[in-house]
Image (cartoon, rainbow, N blue to C red; front, top):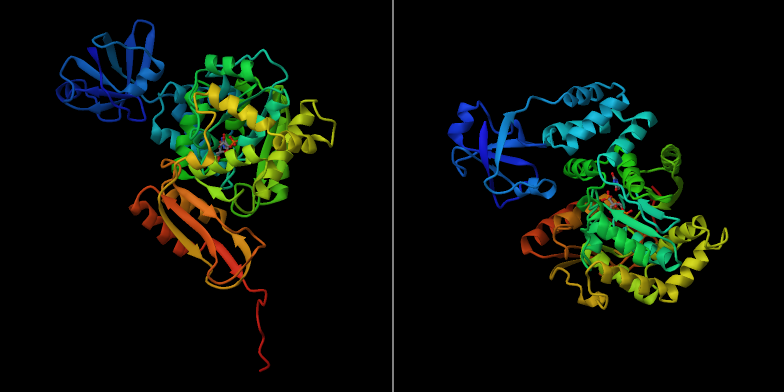
Length: 503
Ligand SMILES: O=P(O)(O)OC[C@H]1O[C@H](OP(=O)(O)O)[C@H](O)[C@@H]1O
Ligand SMILES: O=c1cc[nH]c(=O)[nH]1
């Protein structure tokens, strides 16, 4: 059917195509049906919304479509019902445990990017991967398909380093220190991050507190060739565009299927043209990888996948048994990271991990002799050179380089939990901490989160503060308090574990 474009000022998180009720009846179109919009060479797929917001002879399109496609008001287009894409058959093949061929994986990814697959089919795909997994052939095909359905970056400033954490551990603001340290040593590190997947703050959510993170590839090329680094959100770019779409499903289900995680991370590194990649695998109770053996197996997968992509990969298996640093939540983590860069000092877990990872990258990039990287990283941090580089990154990304940690707004609704008994901190539950911070509003409410006053192994007296929940609304604070009471994220044990009476 022919119709005139009407641009509706709304975002629906999908490509929504509004069709007048009477017209939809005539065309036998129903809500959430897939339609193809054709205008000359341009072809866009969208999901039907039946609504009298538009008149007969018009179709309304949401602004999501204008992100990647140019349609103008009043433009005449053809709207054709589109049947179920072939790739749904391949999703069901994976659902039933089959091994997907390269062409089948390519079809699924292309249909995701072209919005021919809708949320329900994408979630089914992600769930199938969670249940049935992918072997290395499938993961390699998925990685390349994810990268090649988007743009690739070619930066003339070699060697190109990169670092990426598989995430999962609360408070993991580490790479906000690693990137400026590595760049301050003269290496190139075009860092892209995703927003939170299972945590309460992804690195992109944290960096966005003091700088923009949404840039085009051309802007990133300019920034990186000028100052050697960036810290941007992968989802804003047409860089492995399927990644941010599948991450939306992962976030909704709070899962991160291993095969998809490998492809998600390495497709972005491949698209950025990174040659030397360090992968951080936080390991421990309550994170994505619980044992060192599992971490070693995953490391081998990352290294093998890198080999197939022509990238040199090393992996750091890091301690993930409790939150990193003392803060969880975008603004709180931004404060802690900025303060550590300014002073060169901060929580041991943060400084040790950041200088450790940066040290490996300095050795991989050939600017530090083997075994000397961590020491050199610490010097760069303590000398203030890393902070200088961070100021350049913030400035180039449209932020205020003079921002001070205390100027970063944080939630003003607070509640502090204190120690019910004296004793030693014997555990901090990562999943509970993340759940409480998310209940408080993080990452959407930047100022929401948790401030931790204790870490495992420390001694507390009854009444000492353990942690403060921060929120931007009373309602959210109350929800978080209830959850904190129920989950008791911090475990204290007197050293006398049991007394066996003389009975
Ligand atoms: O912890 P969750 O939310 O599961 O994983 C997502 C986080 O892990 C990675 O961290 P980085 O960018 O390497 O610092 C991603 O970019 C993202 O920030
Ligand atoms: O970027 C990331 C990080 C963790 N898991 C993913 O799938 N992607």
